[in-house]
Image 1 (cartoon, rainbow, N blue to C red):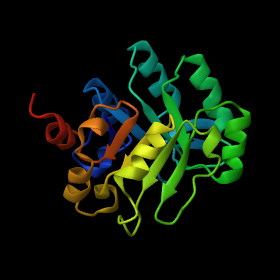
Image 2 (cartoon, rainbow, N blue to C red; image 1 turned 45 degrees about the horizontal axis):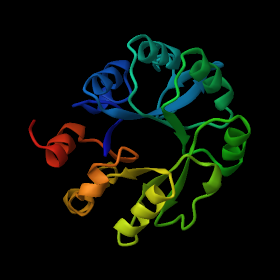
Image 3 (cartoon, rainbow, N blue to C red; image 1 turned 135 degrees about the horizontal axis):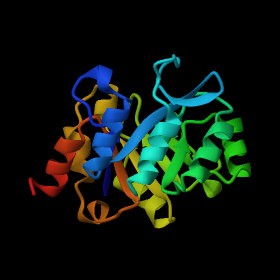
Image 4 (tube, one colour; image 1 turned 90 degrees about the vertical axis):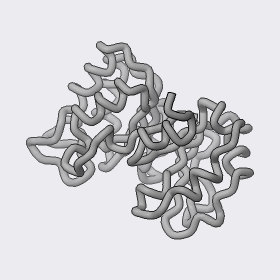
Length: 212
C-alpha cells in the first residue's frame, strides 16, 4: 500500500497545496494528491478559485523531475480544459507515475483521446466507474455511507489490474479508525497498486507499518 498525503504534508490549513507542503511529503516518501486550475493561461496549484499567489504547476513539476522523484501523483482537475496545459508539462518533465481524476465525463473522454492517465470513480453515489476500461485505476470515495465499501470491491479492481486510491474518512471530517482497521489486511498492505489518501500520512505510516 502507498500512502498519499492529501494536499501535501502540513500542520496548518494555510499550508495545504503549497510547494513546501508538497515537496515535504514527497521527500518523506509519500505520494500526494493536489489540485490544479488555470490562471491567466498558466497551470497553477489551487483547490479554490486561483489567484496570483497560487503556486506554479511548472515549478512543482520541475522540482519533481530535477530531484528524480518517483512517488505517485494524484492530480485533481478542478477546471475543464486544463489538460491542454497539463500534458505539455508532464511530457516536458518526463512525469509518468501520475493520474488525473475528478474530471467531468466529457473531460475524461478528452483525457482518453489525449492518452493521459486518469482514474475513474466509484462511490456511494457513483455505482459504476465511467470509462473503466480506459482508466488506469479507480478513485474510491464515500460521501455519506461507507457500508457499500467492502474488501471484495477493492480486491476486484486490483485483481482486474487497476490501481485503487481509497479516500480516508478524515477527508470528510469523519472518524477514520474503522476504515483503517478494515483495510489493515496483509494482501492490501503488500500491494503497491493500493493507495490510501489521507490528511494524516505520518499517522497512517505508523499505523500500517509501525514506528520503524
